[in-house]
Length: 115
Image 1 (spheres, helix red, strand yellow):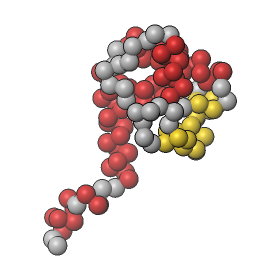
Image 2: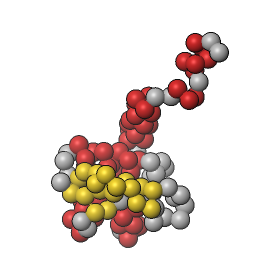
Image 3: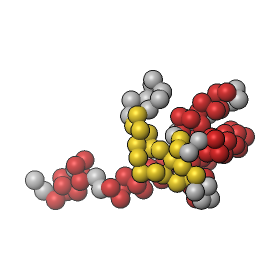
Image 4: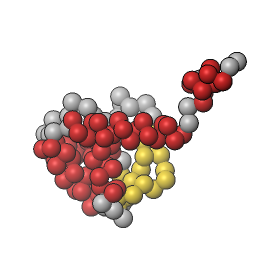
């Protein structure tokens, strides 16, 4: 196997590259999401964080549904909302991942709490 093959091998994909790609994807959906939706999502997130000790993005989605707020074109825009709240030191990850509460999501999701 040549060095070229090793450098382009999917198995050599680094955690650093994954983080960079994730941040770029979050930036992209953040820029494309409607400002009004992001505002509504931040309000919903603030409500949830004040009402619950721990929460997930699914709790915020539920709150948006209760308020009859339509989902954005890219649902991954919620990641940008959580990132903004975390950078503002309103929330932080607990370090736990909990089973999803949404039928269409088949993975564990990060648990958060207020700072």
